[in-house]
Length: 353
Image (cartoon, rainbow, N blue to C red; front, top):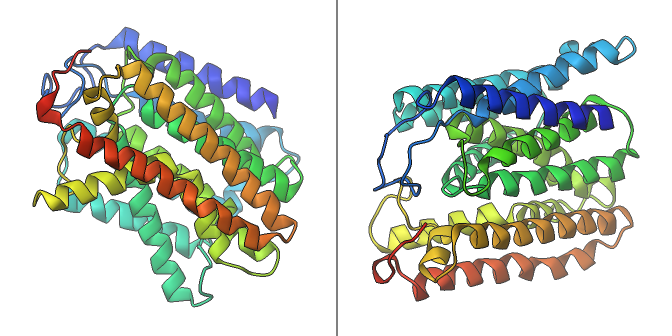
């Protein structure tokens, strides 16, 4: 397993390093557009290529070293592979051509449907069509939420790092840290995020782009269904524990998205239009610099991962009611971030970075 972690780091470092060496303009969309983009410098948006490289090489590497296991004949993995590839290609097209929102939404729906028909479903109500719809909506929400959160150096990469870390421990706790494709894929992608963050933490040299945010959004949405949403079925079938686990694990992204949606609706704007009104931006307006904002989100991400793993331990040991005590955590983070956007509006502060 450690070998796949190291391989993920190396593949990510080498891929991002080569992309930086080969091009300083490829993958740059809306060049020098500082009205929507936070950074006032144009940088390659190609970090997502390294994620997909880690994904593909991990699948190939595992199929080679595993004893006779053909993961490509596994219907669930096949669906995961197809949906991940579709998410990556759609994001890559968006980086290159700035695709229409409806086309992007259609691709996200297709990603969710692909997961559902190949057996990955958030089993909340035991009614297939309701649960299938819930799963598709979940995939769309996560892919868009992480895309929206990708607005400042290191924020989305770090948030995803801790979500993957939580899913990795959840897989280990549930399955006894056994050697399988899911555990290998998680640890390899954890390494991939480490390699990417070397180039993405402020001051960044490369962005993940839509190819990265869409692919990694699909990736964590898939594993969240497997190890967060359906965790309640391990004991007394308390499906609501899955909601608490997901909300806790995804707190940084969920709190930012909810804040932005509320504030834009209040202003009569579309929630899907880009802007410098995210919780990260308002922290800068309050006087923090980009690195300090990253540290705040790192702390939130770490606590979120720790608490999500703790919830899973409680559920496995039949302390399901105790998980209700974790609900206030999300709302505390949300109100802290939301209050900051009201207290420090954009117009009152001069940006320095």
